[in-house]
Picture 1 (spheres, helix red, strand yellow):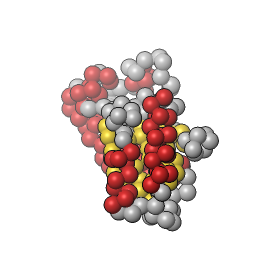
Picture 2 (spheres, one colour):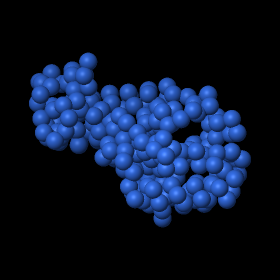
Picture 3 (tube, helix red, strand yellow):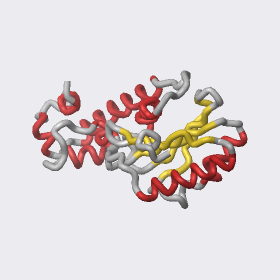
Picture 4 (cartoon, one colour):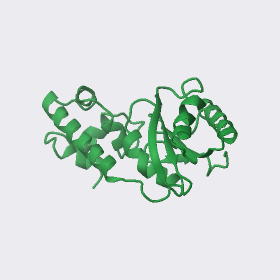
Length: 200
C-alpha cells in the first residue's frame, strides 16, 4: 500500500489525490513519509486542510511509528558500510526539520561503543569543530568514528560546507590516530557516502 493511501485511512473525508495535490505539483506522486513525519500537528492541519483533532491523531500515529522504528534497530554487529549507518540513523534524523550532526564511535572491531549528537543547525566548520567530535573518542578510547548528518530538503548531495567539515575532521583524525571511516549524508529515502564516492 502506498504511503499516501495509508495516511488517508484515518481521514475519512480525504481522497488520495487531494492529499497529494495539497503538497504542490512539484513533488513526486508518492509522498515522502519522512517529510510528513517532521510536521507539527498545526502544520499538518494547515498543509492538509485538516481540523485540529484529525491532525493531532495523524501526528500521534506518525510519532509512534517513528519511535517504534528507532527503538527497533540495535547496532550490535560490526558496521560494514554506509548502508548500515543509514539504516541505523535514518529513523533518528531523516524526519527532522533542521540539520543534525551525529557521530558513531567504534571499537577496534568496528562495533558501536556509543553515539553523540554534536550540533543542530546548518552544518558548517564553525558549528562542527574537531574538538567536539574527537574529545569523546579520546576519553572513551574509540578506535574510529563515523559521522552523519541529515538534509531536511531530502537531497543528500553534499554542500561546500559539508566537504570542508569532512576534510577538517579527516585531518584531525589522522593526527590523533582515530580514523574517520565515512561521512553519511541522509536524505529522504536515500543517502550519500563520502567513502563510496571516493572522497575519503
